[in-house]
Image (cartoon, rainbow, N blue to C red; front, top):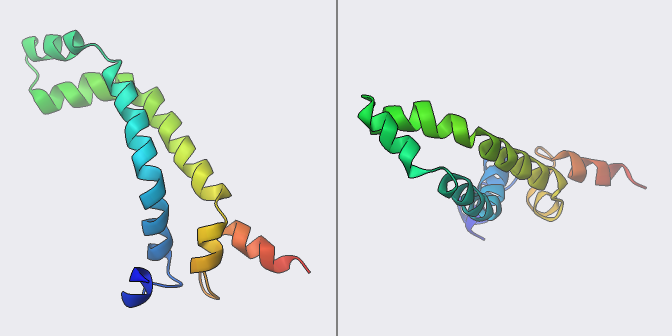
Length: 107
């Protein structure tokens, strides 16, 4: 109803918003586990070596967390790729995902 009120039905932006609402909570929980597994001593040693907080994050923490970021990205992609219900409801004639478009070919 909100998407209809905002006149977003049958747009790519509507699908992006809807897919984000059900993938962001789990991916946040998943990324929290990866970032909690990184020892604080690595961050503190980067600060001692002369990095500021942002530099330590970009040069130390993010490269260590890259496997978790990649796994979370793959999860989000597969979830959005395999999702059919929202795409079938929100897509019209102009905007369709591949699963919704394949459904129209049957029959």
